[in-house]
Image (tube, rainbow over all chains, first blue to last red; front, top):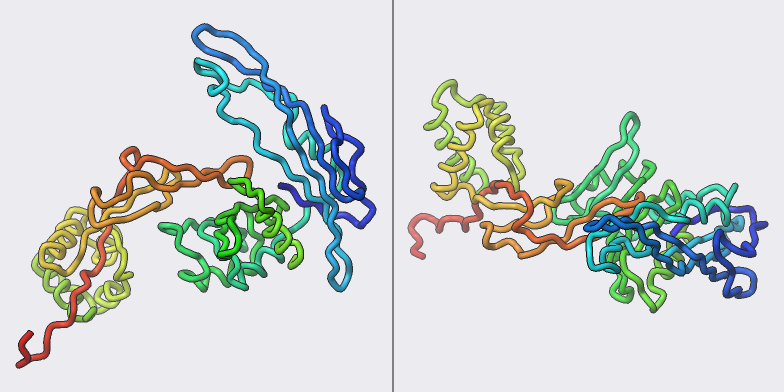
Amino acid sequence: MYVFSHNGSAKLPADVVDGEKVLDVDGVRGLYLSRAKYVVVLRDPLEEETLEFLWPISVELKRMHHSAPKDYMIIRFVVLEKNVSSYFDRPAYIAGKSITEETVLAGVAGGLPTADLNKGIKKLWADGYIESTRSRFKKKYSLSSETMDEERGIKEHYPDLYAIMQQSPLYTTLFEVNDDNNTVDHFSADPSRGIIGFSSYSDQGDADAVIGRIISNN
Amino acid sequence: MRMRLLEELFQIISTIVPAPKMSEKEAEMLSRLNPDKFYIENVRSILNVSYAAAVRICETAVRQGVFERRIEVLCPDGAVAASAESEGGLPETVRCWHEEGGLLEREELPTRTLEKIVFYRLHERPDSVPYGQTA
């Protein structure tokens, strides 16, 4: 999931690369389907095949009301099949893809700056709603990383480091969610690049609830 | 209790590396070891002894009940996934993470395929009963 900032003027795109809009809710939430083609190389014997997927992509415009309104465009992708061998009865490798997240993003959010989510994420961390067990972050003269033993919490076990991290740009970081009412137990984020990833799908909107908390505190 | 364990440790060290005597600074650094987890290299570097001598010190300390030896399993990226008193006590699979497209993806991996390393901790023992009192 990618979050971009805008000045309130962004609109839902009419379509996406190699696809079309299939749902539009009040001009602020759109669902799109792209046709993604994978070129697959099979072994024993060597052969080339093509796999086609319908790739759902969601685009949402969100306005958060702070002292000054902040506007975001949130683009969600489903991660398509990575293990193409399951489609064939022999070893198979992806040789190429007709579209990627980057090509879709260029068409939908081209020109918009990525949202910096450090503030929202750090607020949830400070409040104890989330805790990090591994992170890459920028120090004064280096890019540093911390991976805790047995997924211990950085804030709980290394308060001095946590204090440094609260003042540093965070890059790829893993968070656990301390919310008994939310089925999401972990998520990964690159707050400085506006990227958030969930490893499992929740049909109860639990991932949306986490995203909502991040951007409402951002 | 920790001071008593450290005194026992100093005695072990003095039998293995009798000279030169441990300096005050080394004793202070040893007392700063994380009692819950330290590695042979931590002991070796503080005492400035060979790796083999550090192993002997740690293993003697285990035999004399000053240290506990434990084992931890490492994910392919080096992260410690789990620890136990022995390899048999480790879970059959552990959760690891790998980076993909700038984000972290979860995977369950069989413990038997992963690297394990030994670490030590100070043995937790109840304080001895006061003099004159029977247990």
